[in-house]
Length: 85
Image (tube, rainbow, N blue to C red; front, side, top):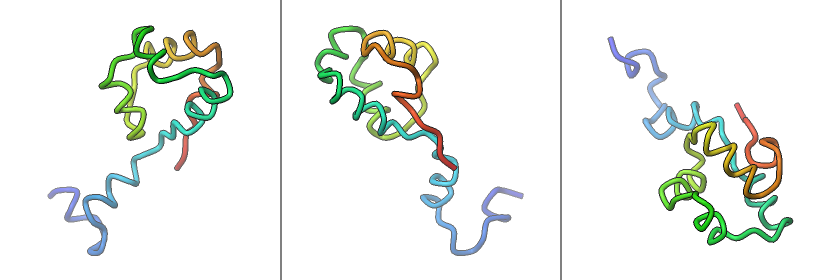
């Protein structure tokens, strides 16, 4: 038995993925704008392109990366990410 055996018929793979997307990095971009921080500054301070891509796509990041972002921007985790259902 696979997950597709128990999902409703009209639920697509994309829909299944959306059910587990609980990260929203919208607050990060708003905080960066308020603080005058650019993506270039993040890159210069140790955040790589792959991580920036993950943030743009609301994918997982590590706690180390979250800590790094907070240190660079001068904010708290609540200023970077919010959790949704």
